Length: 340
Length: 164
Image (cartoon, rainbow over all chains, first blue to last red; front, side, top):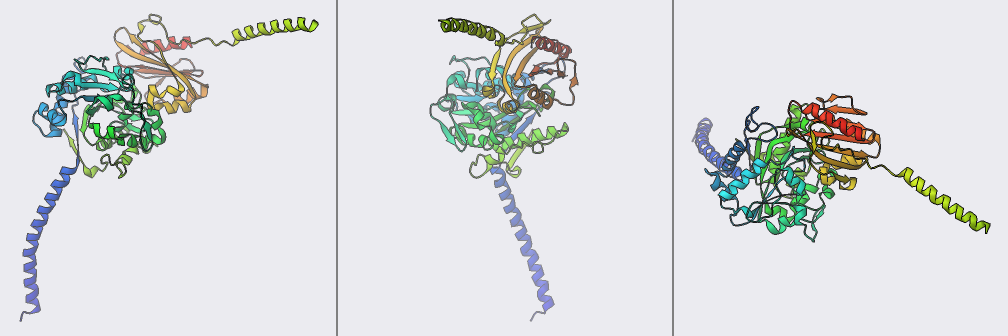
């Protein structure tokens, strides 16, 4: 018969053996769970080039960035996002080659703070290299004036990249509804495009707090002003839930080359700054979550209150992430943020 | 008969009074935008666009609410170029009262602005000038910055102010 002391000694030794095996198993299981969790995270690439706006006298001086550097930054960003070594292969994995691809830009803030023409042309160039016909690329915004603010010239010739506006194309007669959104949608989105690449520009917004990916959809409807109530919440989230917007607008290539950190969405040169960055992601909520953080960080640097302290937090981002809307995630733990 | 004579005379007086009153009350249409060459170096490069308060969102989106709350009636906007170096936009907001114009003016200031002697109140930045004259609020913003931009903008601002 074993003594109590002997029993405890043997039991302890056995526990160590079992424990070590169990620990290994638990570690392996945890690693697998981590990998799966990592794979299900929403990926957002934040690509930066501090030299996009160059030194005095060189390319990229002043309001417009260095075009070649923008192209290079886009290539780095898209390959990092997809994991493909070549940018053309990366584009082929993201867009249908034989369909019409829309580029929804944003020129509301005038030519001082609009989606940069260098970025628009860089995307259009790579789409063509990937096999998209020029006439199957449509660059558009709310009206002709905004399009021109993005440095584009109106063109409807189908042999070249087409550039026009929601108001010229006209809106569907049928009213689309989702929550508070009761609007008519531009025919460019409903009848022309199989896929839209959302190309907003990062800005502070007097009403919404931040305007970037989801807010840019205000430019595809006839009466965006009806969605401005309560700091655009739930207007922005509801609008993005309208099926044609939810399903067709699939990728954001966000322009954070320059930005206004206060006083937006208009152009205030005294509040202009150059993040010199692009944000790429398919989860529009995750992209906007990072955009909010960027604006707030800059405001803190400039001694301004956070958007929440200023009384205009972009609450529509959390609304877009809730179960009713389910447009993406605003949980930092579920966002895979890749800084390059 | 006497009544008829008085009736005719009364009608004539009334008609004359209406014409005089009409002339007296007719509002002179203000065109605040200097023509090309009126201010040294500046060319007007676009037609003037005007947005009524109800349509202001088409021009400045969500910022429109702030102006509407302050009593905006309309905004007129036009673009300019200075010696092929600088492009700028001039926005002239017509508010219902001077207090509304002041409210926007005060809210748009930031710490690096310099007060300048122009109209009722004015602030100048490196690339913009904002001033108020009565119930008009004017924002002039340049898209580029050169060593001459600040002075050039002030010159244009004085030209606009003199037209208001």
